[in-house]
Image 1 (cartoon, one colour):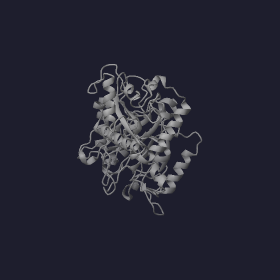
Image 2 (image 1 turned 135 degrees about the vertical axis):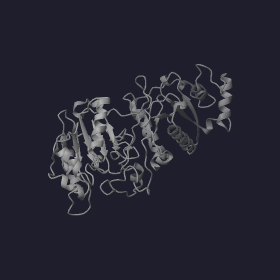
Image 3 (image 1 turned 90 degrees about the vertical axis):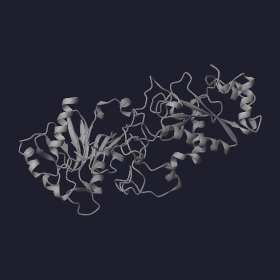
Image 4 (image 1 turned 180 degrees about the horizontal axis):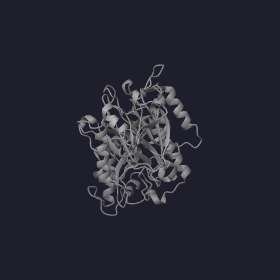
Length: 473
């Protein structure tokens, strides 16, 4: 399928481009147009398509007017054929294709005034559309949501793709979750794409090609599989704000364009598709694909192999988990959400967040009368683990744990500058001189029940909450 931003009457430019794509990549099933399909002076150009002199090369579906000037082109508010191969979907509703693909659409811009102009939608329109869909007991979400502005309808409709326009810019947000990890059943992710206007001089992207299998034809496991670069839901009220009772606007009260960045530049900054501040690069690159694991991975957060009951905190690029068979109850791992084998492979953003977790955990353990030892482990492992092992002050043989560590390492004939093959730092930490738990040096010999693991994880989450920097954003 293809999605397109504001056409603004440049029909020939759009359809010539579509034909070129067909020749290069093969035929697409349909074209979905959001934003302004008609421009201010398009009557002569449109007449050629309306009378059949020219024809759209692909089945094209468009949204309705966004201003008074173009209302005249949409005579039937329930939708109608405008020209051969060009169909107006209607003011609001659901379109289901022959393959079962479900497309929800809402035409026009938001209006807070009564009566609502013919080129706008009201809060009641949003409510009725939401109610019509979400009242079904088996409702899980929709395949595609089409709107012209960037409204909050995605919060409850949970589209797999949400296309919007009107801002004359291209913006693809990282995919986001529709569930709370560890608290709700896994659901599919949503991708939000705003498209630029056709033929814009800055050559911003206005046509987006994508492949999608209808939700109703997918098995549950494939549908809820999370992309490696998935983020938290940007519409969701933060736990911290809920905890301190801070009053923030509900989705219905919030301006519909404010969920991703402030369009006037007064509040926050636009996030480019790379996840970086847009000011740092006038030409943001496409997000690079995260490396894929060679097989099943215990530590990729989106992987079904992850023991999610051990996860205690999730950031933007990394997460914390209790160690399986840890040396102590609060032995944790810092892990990248994406699949990386070592620190040297990490991007700048991930390295920065790893640093935040390190500093925060040091402060966390300091407040609990402990110091901590951190080391990277990727021996015989395909996913980076940064082990964080706290050591009570009364377990240190000197004032500085580093001195105790060096002393014990020397006794074990271990050179700290380069650890000999088959040596294990955990053996040193488990020794009588530091933690005095030599029987726990091998994690495989430290089995406890899942119920005990869940109890330890809940305790750590609660204790760590005051230090959670991810709630400060």
